[in-house]
Image (cartoon, rainbow, N blue to C red; front, side):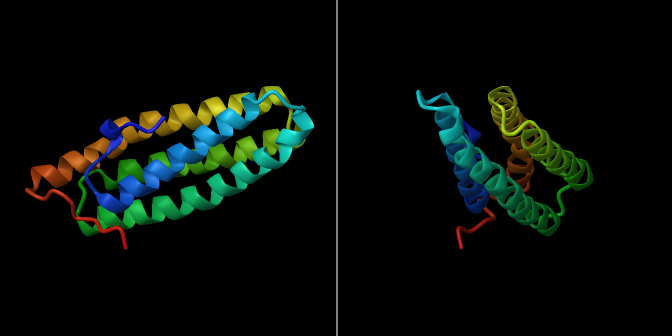
Length: 143
């Protein structure tokens, strides 16, 4: 589901975004596979664990970058991140309390991809626009 149009022009953030899209895409494909639902539960658990870890790390990197470039919308962006982290925690609770039901897993997958597309195409693109307005083309490194 990754598209080149999602790039914001900051190499390491773009790499992280691509990794998130790849993982969510794999998850969505896994829950749609023609196999017993119980066989999918380990993949669901792996995805929620991964999202909680990677989102936290990605947000730290993205927020540090925003502070480094004196991004004028940092506070608002930070709030979006906090809301999403709380949403992931709530979704974990819903998945666990439902014994990883198929319906809840599909809702989780839909929320992940919707949030990711919306956030990257709207909120994160503003970071790229800000960087470009300052005359830079890629302030980030892939290191």
